[in-house]
Amino acid sequence: MTPTQIAALIAAGAFVLLVVLLAIPLIKLGRTLDEATIAIRKAHENSDPLFTGANSTITHVNTQLERVDGITANAKTISGNVSALSSLFTATLGGPLVKTAAFSYGVSKALRARRKRRQEPAGRHFRRKGKGGRK
Image (cartoon, rainbow, N blue to C red):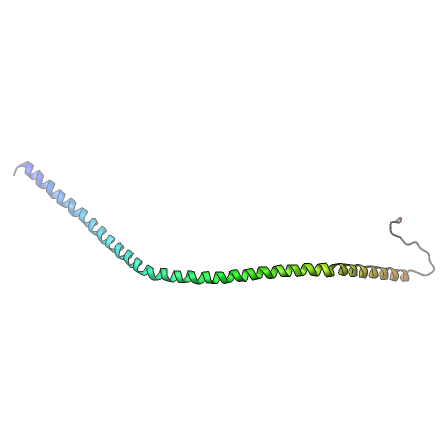
């Protein structure tokens, strides 16, 4: 054998070794891709019932939301009616109620002044301070 043939045999052996070393990760990568394909297929098969359940749930939620919309509209109407009723009550009874409160305040102030005058000592004259008078 000539040195060129020996070099060619060494190069061929090195190439075979390189192919074997690269084949191992490629085989593992192929297995990983097969497992990923199986997992994706199972997920696809199991997603149909999930989507069906989600669709029925969304339909049920939409039905409930329509009911809530009706309840909200009724509550809005009721709050408007209560507001109108309170305005009517204020307009009807507000004036007389204020007048009654003012009258009762005046009566209580007059009674206090009368009691105060009765408690003053008899026989002594003394000046009462009036409104706007000197102090």
